[in-house]
Image (cartoon, rainbow, N blue to C red; front, side, top):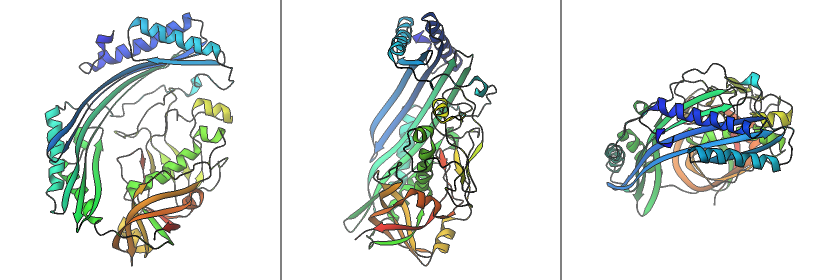
Length: 449
């Protein structure tokens, strides 16, 4: 059985993963389990890195696993293995059953509601294998780095260029009859360089990501963008401590929406550990802002027709006109909260915010303030909403960039920050699971000198 798993024949691999999962169900039933779910997966990938024209890393990844969760009434046990041999699978199921027999009963555990399981699984065009030889990946990474290093004489060093290609296949089954397959690829090219002038140096980067290799930007474009971003940061200064409007550039604005999502996942709500506790129906964003999810988007980097429990996903407004419309719930959290699962076992999918205007137009309307292009540190408390992070970017005066800034800290409270959003740009970055343009916040504390 183990020999059947491989990259050459996808259909054979899918068949093997399904058979492994189904065998787990049969073995669990033989042990007396009242319900069972199993997932088998296979992943492979190639990653290379070059620095200053020399190959630094060539890594080939090939992973597989099968995991099983069994239920004896309201007792639950889980186990997993990377060994696909029949004896290892049997022992894994037996281990899960032993664990279940020794756990306390929990009235909220169990399989997903059968009525919520996906019955129609569309092809979302997510699986685009790339026959990428190591020498070809090295050439692409080198082209990105060469373009960055040759962009300007002030590019004085490099942390390297990289190229990667990954593919994963997964099968999930449960004892209520659900069988679901998912396959997807993700490819990327990136570059990190250092600019220097008069003894001062600045580092920046850029990348391109896509489901298909044809979706990637040219490596030269990636390198030139990385160089441009590093060069723009030369001559950075510190600011005096003050309060000012702040623009989050798209590469960092997604983190703000990510904090909102983290606060409304089911576990944050039933554990009573969220700054948006019991906020369903509350105004959490300005009335001009809607946050929505599009899990069935073709070639979306976070698209999925069903979640990790087999629950069907669907397009939905998470926040409509500033009002929180839903929590993000798996089956366990839904039962704890007396609600219905929303298809979020395993996370959210393609969360987006529409906006209007370019970053330059937003800066022009703001007049004077801070443009943040990089965030550092982890000073975010999802329980209280307290927010304090190191930042770098640009100071804006008269609607134009005046000079780059560094070694500053921006602070506030997430509840106030989210409700203090005065504009969202149309310049959203589509290379992430959360896609949002530049965000303007009316006022934040900026700590500097």
